[in-house]
Image (cartoon, rainbow, N blue to C red; front, side, top):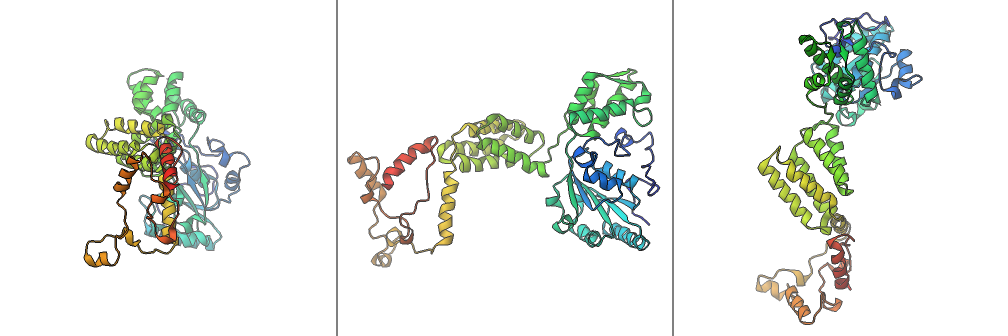
Length: 455
C-alpha cells in the first residue's frame, strides 16, 4: 500500500494533471497550475528550452531538490511532474512521514522496478527529515530504485546530508516578481471555474497594487489575501475589492525573514558589512528587517559588540563602550523600546572611523605563538615574591615604567628614546612588530607616538 499522497488519488501517467480541487479548497490550492504552460515564474528553470523543462516534458526527471522561499512554486512543480510522468508517483510530507513510510515506498518501488516501472518520490519540506530518514532513503536514490524530488525553504547544504545532496541536482527558485504575482492575481479574478470569476467581483487598481506589494513575492500569500478580502466584500454586499479590504485581510507585508533559517545569516551578514562599510542608511534598514522578523535583539547586539572591537577598534575606542552600553540597555528595557539604543549604536558604528588593526595584530602574535618555540619568560619580567627567586635573578634589571615616564616628563619628552626601552618579548622574538596602527581617527595619533617609541 502506498504512503498517503499529498495530492490525493490520481490516475497515473495520464498526462492530464490532477483532478480539480473541490470548491471548498483554498483559492491557492484551486488555482495551482496544472501544466508548465500555466506555471508562472522561474523561467530560468522551466522557460522554453531550459534543462528542467525538457526533463519534465520528456519524462526523464533526475533526482532533484527544489530550494526557494514559500509560495514560489516548489510543490506545484512536483504536481506537474505527477501529472505528466509515466512513473509511479508517491508524495510524502517530511513533517508526518517516518522511516516506516519510506520503507513501504521503497518496497513498492522495488516491486514495480522489476516490471520496468519507475517510482518518483516527492518529499515536501525535506529539510525536516532527520539523519535516520535521510539515511533510509539514500541507498535507493543511489541505485535508482526511486527518483527523489525534495522541496525545501532551507539551504540544503545545511539541512540535507552531503551524501544525499551529491546524488541530486539542486534547483534554486526565486521569489516571484511583482509582475508575476499580478499575473497570478489576475488569473484568479478571471477564472470562473477555479477562481473568483463567477462571483461578479472587481479588484480596484489600488487594491491590486497593495495586494502585490504585501505578498512580497509569495503567490500563496497573494491568493490567500485575495480570497479573504473577497469574502469580506461579499459579506457586506459590495462588488469592488478596495485597497482597505486587502490591507485588512493581510494586515502587514509578508515577511521572508526566518530567524532560524538562511535569512538569519544572510541579513546579519548584510548588516555587519553595512556597518563596516560606513553606510548608516543600509545598516538601519537591515537592523529594521531583523527586528521586524523577530530576531533575538541580543544576538544583534552581540554582533555589534564584536564589530566595535574588530572593525572600529582603536580608531574610536568609545565604540566598544557604546556597544556594551547598548547590550545593557537592551537587556534592561527589552523590545520594542530596545530598538532605540540599537539604532543609535548602529549609526555610531557605521559613522565611526574604521580600523582592523586589533584583530590583525592579535593574529600576527598568535601566528608566532603557534609557529615558534615558546621560550621562557625573560628573567627581568618574572615575578619575584621569594628570596630564592630573587637570588636566581628573577626581576633583576626590571625598570619600573612609571619611573621612566617621570624622567621623560622632566626632560620634556613625549616618548622614551630607544636606548631607554626595555625588552618585553622573548629573545627569539626580539624586534617583532605585531601591532601596526591604522590611519583613521584616534589611531592616527597613536601611530605617531608608537613610531617615536619604537625608534
